[in-house]
Amino acid sequence: MLDLLQLSGKQRQFVDLLQQQQTVTSLRSLCAQTGFDVNFINGFLRSGALDGYVQWQEHSQQRWVLTAKGEDLGGLLPGVALADRLLAGIRDRATLQADLGPAFSLNYGALRREQAVDLVDGDGEGAVAVLKSSVLSAYQQRQGVFKAIACGEVPAAGAASSLEWLQQQGYITSRVESDYSLTVLPALQALELGNVITALGSELILSGQWREVELKPYDIHAEVPDVAYGRPTILTQCIQRIRDIFLNMGFNEMSGYLVESAFWNFDALFTPQDHPAREVQDTFYLAHPQTLPLPEDPTLVAQVKQVHEANYGGQWTEAEASRAILRAHTTTSTARRLHQLQGKDGKYFSIDRVFRNETVDRTHLAEFHQIEGVVVGELLSVRTLMGYLTYFYERLGFKNLKFKPTYNPYTEPSLEVFAYHPPSDRYLEVGNSGLFRQEMLAPLGGGEKSTVAWGLGLERIAMLLYDVEKLSDLIGPDIRL
Ligand code: PHE
Image 1 (tube, helix red, strand yellow):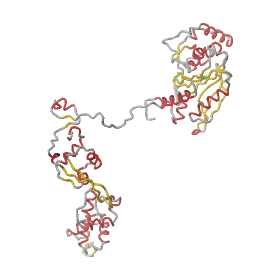
Image 2 (cartoon, rainbow, N blue to C red; image 1 turned 90 degrees about the vertical axis):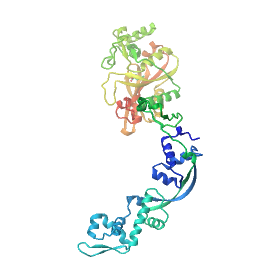
Image 3 (cartoon, rainbow, N blue to C red; image 1 turned 180 degrees about the vertical axis):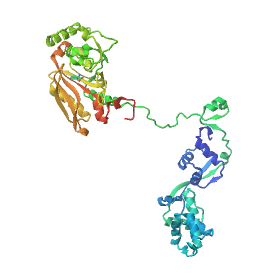
Image 4 (cartoon, rainbow, N blue to C red; image 1 turned 120 degrees about the horizontal axis):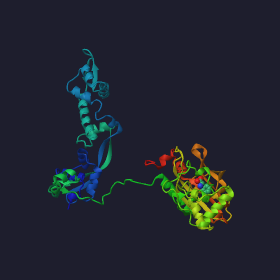
């Protein structure tokens, strides 16, 4: 049984069309005349939906189509416009020229080539004489055949000489194509198509008409276009990629807090309480809460105080260490982890957000991400550190690294990391690193071990990998990247 409700709008239209036919000798020409897509109808027939309603048979047939040269003619053979007029009895050259305009010479040339016409002198411009009127009528026939082919129709029988001529001129060419003949069976003629609604609109609902019409059910299994409606941002993709690299290197991921006490951000990292980085120009201090409790471990706080006062002089105050801030680096997580480890070996990383009170420009924003890493073990050296960093950057495609000595309160030696960027033929700063000092490690409980660590810029890497000019392009709502 043909389930009319399951038919699409197009399929129903085709059924409707078939109801007006008995037999169709060429499905192709039927489609050409009515605007249906042959392949679509072919699929409809082959689906079996019309079995018992329509019989169809495939046959291959030679079909004529226009060549590119034929297409260029725009539907009119050169010569036919003049032939029409000559056959209508117009011979005066001035009249013909005015009528045909610039096309006159093209038309005349075409007919002249077959010696069908000639120019004769007369009053004024003279006249066009007809030498062979049979050629002129042949032109009219050729035009009819040409037009039919252009419209996708099958030329009428008896067109053989026109076809041969059109082919010789290079206007048409033949192609073997499969076509279908259909016989419409009485069962189809008997079908009542009725009025099926495929889209329920507000009008139908408001007027209450929806109660009377037949509604096409939704096919929830129908294939729908694959729409890419969401995907991770470049930064998220980068984070995932980097996370995979460190996990594959045997590191564990650590996490921390966006809001931290100055203690974990500075004091535990042996950064003096009068260090310029602690000033409001560099660090965001919070109004709510203004302070955070210091660590519960009293020896930790006492030892930090002791090492600061012994090395930097002056008074170390809990008040300064308790101030609440947005963390300025992820080394806060490292410090907390070292305190937890109490000298146990381990490899940890984090990829997390940090905040600095910076002037915003093309390459700086007030918040960004750091790739933090720390390795605790025996006899780790600068070579160990350089080895980890070289290996990591190589995984991302940065082959040439340079290390430059720098200063951090908590590391000694300290190395800045530069990666070669071929497009700009420059080394760009990508991170900072070093071996933690005893003054920092001892109060945290890791004084016996050697510890290498780094903090690398995520956005820098993303900008280089994806060739992004402005840092703000990486994090805005614009998803075109
Ligand atoms: N915390 C440093 C920064 O923000 C990076 C760093 C981490 C340096 C660990 C040395 C050791 O630049």
